[in-house]
Image (cartoon, one colour):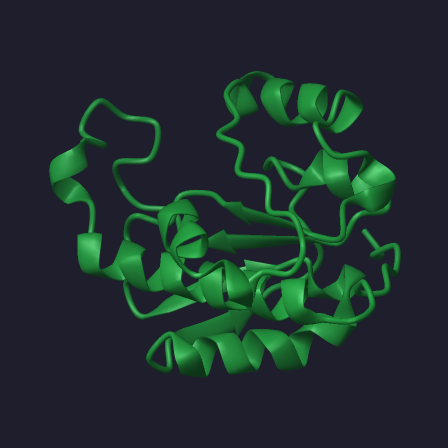
Length: 164
């Protein structure tokens, strides 16, 4: 996603920050630290896009967080079409269990992409050979297309505190 965005900077008039967090399973350690010590001030952070467990696309991608930024729904639909009509299943607010949560708590719209739990979840059998590379690429394209649309917006998406 970062490489594709860097190759076409005209699509991204806003600053993009790419972060790989660690410590999610131990209490959102990396994302909580970043949200408290951001490279770009949180007040200038327009949206957070979180890709969590997107390596096993089996039909549709679950997208949550739109309750906190309903104006992004049309952008997500356009991004899905641009990503080859990838099927989306809209979920509720952010789960609170992934790296989008510290951003939601700070009033930053945060959209989470997830392709579902599977039988290898948290097991040694969850290895790279089981990744659906084509599916993961489609989810990455969806996120890239949504990022481009958000970056091109003249105004930041309005944040609505989601009901939990």
